[in-house]
Length: 329
Figure 1: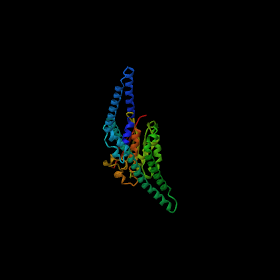
Figure 2: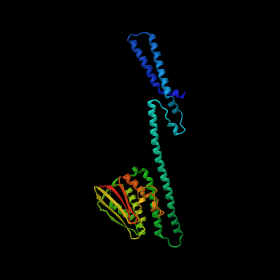
Figure 3: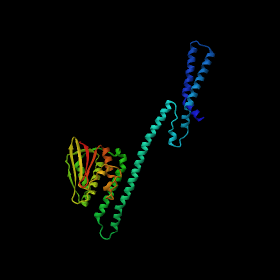
Figure 4: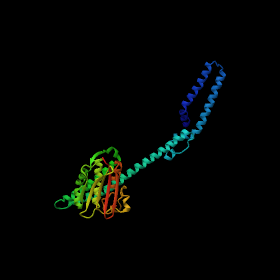
């Protein structure tokens, strides 16, 4: 009965219009001088029979559809059953199926994003235990506190916090992004100065060759994070003392190409294509307990969102070159 009520409500406008149309035609005949009451009654009855027959046939065709939408689905498969027979309801079912596909894609994207956050947080928390443990040991030692060692562990904590914050902000990147004309040399110099303890500790020396008037359109905050990741990786995987880290920029075909080249251990060819994948640590990552596999992934994601091209070249034993290409301002 519920399906009948819904059907009649759905077609109530049609029924009212049909009655109005019959009465209007009879009124025209009446005004034209036609006064045969029996014919008028016969016409009304025939119209009602035809209308009721049409509605009954239409209800039979749509009965399964009305029953389907009146019965609350217990699973998504129940809602996606195809049993419509009229063009309108077939189109509606097609629309629902396409809508469900979009929902699935969005749900999968959200699940992957949540899973990435969870996995990253688990790795990050595990890694942060190391500097905290070292700090506890330093505090337990008798005698004067080794401030240099404390500062090193604090820097590791700060770097870890910055990475996890940037990872969280990546989901709302468009709201946080602000493109400006940025002088590249002062930006790079500031990042190098912030990491001077890292250079001194690892006995790696930076060399900056960037013109003072080199201007690029970018987001300085995100670019600072990206370059910081490149510098940290370059120094971390340079195990020999006295090596250099070269930071240079050239203008070519209305583009500015920033190159960061180290003299470290290099990346194996089998890992090179996967270093920008989330959580990929590779062969080099196994040589240090500090690798999360997220640094180059975040750098690649940010570069793509900013419209910068990121390229990585490497040779085992010779070092790694990372190039970021900007549109020349």
